[in-house]
Length: 116
Length: 111
Image (cartoon, rainbow over all chains, first blue to last red):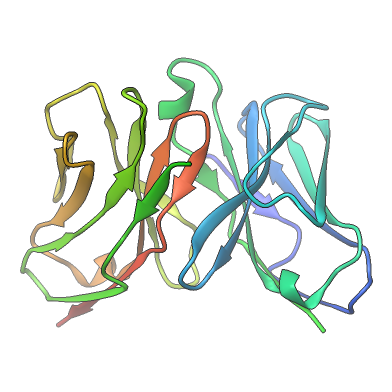
């Protein structure tokens, strides 16, 4: 079974803090994604990566950065957390080969981040 | 930009009955992919079913089937013989170069 794990289920931070959210997948997937999930808005893509050290902006990259130093690990960084970044953050991974856009995304359990 | 609309924030169904969740999308592309994902309470999101836009035949996976109407840009999910375990948030998603999700439909299954 594919397993996508996220470093924390719940996280509480203060405004202005630097926050790291870690995601690890164990299926050698090339693609990795970070989404935020908000009620009434569904999932919105923050960043994705299709290879080590590669990254692409999604719909809402402002206030976020990412790091992918190893294939299995994709980190989301909030440089200076703000209250409007309080949300559920979901990581996902998928296989690049074949019909890449058709491939299933496997999701982690999510990190519920609260910024006070 | 492509958008995905799920017009039903909440739906309920009696156990063993059939329910249909609606999804429409907006795109100028001809080739793309559509997905339904399920997010059970406090559990990880999983793929339910997917459809390639160039295939006219509707996808089916056991009790789950879709009604794909390309001209109408509609991609509804039908759940037959609903079970208590089907209770979840359901997200419709579109993929071409980017990936877009709808706002979700919360499905309640009544015993």
